[in-house]
Amino acid sequence: MLRYLRLLGQWALGWIGALGRASMVWFQSLAGLPRRGDMTLLLKQIYQIGVLSLIIIVLSAFSIGAVLALQGYTQLARVGAEESVGLGVALVLLRELGPVVTGLLFAGRAGSAVTAEIGLMKATDQLSSMEMMGVDPLHRIIAPRLWAGMICMPLLTAIFNSVAIGGSAIVGVDWLGVDAGGFWGGMQDGVQRWEDIGKGMVKSGVFGVVISWIAVFQGYDSTPTAEGISVATTKTVVYSSVAVLALDFILTLVMYGDFN
Amino acid sequence: MRRLFLCGLVLLSAVAAAAASDPRTLISQTADTLIGVIKEGKTYFDKDPQRFYASVEKVLDPTIDFHTFSKGVMAVYFKRASPAQRDQFEATFKSGLIRTYGKALLDFGDESIVVLPAEHPSKQPDRDSVKMEVHSKEGKVYPVIYSMRLGDDGSWRMYNIIINGINIGLTYRNQFASAMNAPENKGSLDAVINGWGETIAHIDPATQGAPEGTPESASGEE
Amino acid sequence: MRTIEISVGAFVLAGILCLVFLAFRVSGVGVGDTSGSYLLNAKFNDVAGLRVRSKVSLAGVTIGRVAKIGVDSETAEAIVTMQVSQDVANLPVDTGARIQTEGFLGGRYISLTPGGEEQVLHNGDTITNTQGAIGLEGLIDTFISKMGSK
Image 1: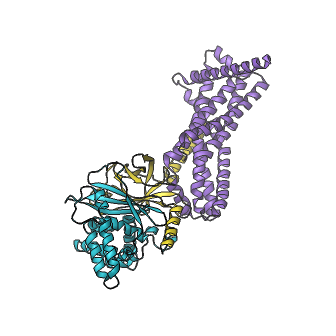
Image 2: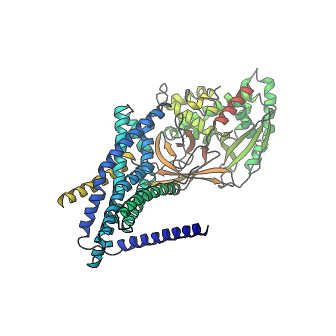
Image 3: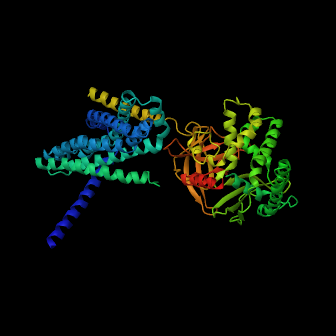
């Protein structure tokens, strides 16, 4: 019995310790002024993290937008409200699906890649060699990836939302025959800039920060073995996904709390 | 609905002499006067309806501010109307009301009326609203609210009435606007003013003056 | 390196363009976006079904949104605060505010009908000429009572 309590205690302490290390990584990476050559590093990371994620984001967005339009149309047509499909799809995407799905895809594709990369660097002693040469790995390796993640998430979310809405328009207006004026007009009438778009982008920003942080830390903190890297990448995807979904719930409550 | 409106008118009529400083007193003072007129009216109405309408008008004149009431009904069109048209509408509006509900007044008899005391002081010195309840013989209670306004001559008069939650002034305002937009009137103020008697004979305030065929008019149609 | 720079630039540009698309084609011009807005209050006996963000319309055109719904405990009335576009600035003091239903299934909204008075409403003024929500029960009651009085 006591053994289990002790294990629980160890686990909890270990968890808190990890949080502490993660926070230190966070602050130490982001502290300090940018130096010459930092921009190049950042650009390279934005390419790796953002540009290379575009394919999956765009394809998923189009499919999701199309499916939402299809399903929405069927249900709304029952009560003669097909023209509202534009508004319905737009609200669902902007407020919830856009940030969340982009976050999940981002965590799976970019997050795991970053973790693996950093984990491998640690396992092959690249990080410690850098330290010995007087180069701060937190500044050269970690920070660009953190910043790139935080910049790319909102951009990817905006692209996701636009492509999804475009996809829903193609299905709704061109295929199912919803009146274009009603589709777009209803959307414009009901979507509010700050309430829907703005708050959705805030969500994506928060997700970007959290996912980048988890991905980077898991790589940095991984056990420097092949198995360790694999465990770390899995943790990134799992923790990020859970964090995104949980934060989404909390943020939704906070932002849209007026449910009555 | 008409009976309710008319209970409202009953209460409104004040003993002409009293320029009451309190709107509640004004309304409370009324019941007997108009009830008396009605009782008398039942005897001679079939022979001389005009006389009845005239005596009702005499009682209501000092109590209802028909100028403000009709101005509220004309709403945006008031500015476009010439002084002659405004006066004509005020007169048409007044006689229309008295005529339309005058006959129903005769059915008034067994309802009891309670004027509620003021729950809170009015926020403006020259405006107030008086709440009243009409208890029908079946036991139903209908709330009536009068919007009162203090005129320059120091007397309170009513300029709007809300029966059972339905704002009568707004209902008539909508009806006036609908009439102005109706194709047969071609947007002519004179046509609408002249046709007003016909228009209100067909409104039932319960439908909020909505044109036929809308969801609001589908229930409670006469 | 060149390709990386170009693709990152294109990526960021695409992202920004998408944001612009969302802000303007998806959300349209909001209330008072171009000219600002002011606040008006209105007291109702019943606001059932009206929500914050419900629209406020004049002659069928959306000119505002409901910003807040509160209660005046003294008079037991609901106080609705509306944000109205500055484009609609000269509403007379006897303007009417009615709570209506949009279409058959739709939500509630406030419809304003200007009055005939010369004085106009200013920022923070209260509309007293109001008509609250008429529930289905109310209409049924009225119908039944009319049947009874015939």
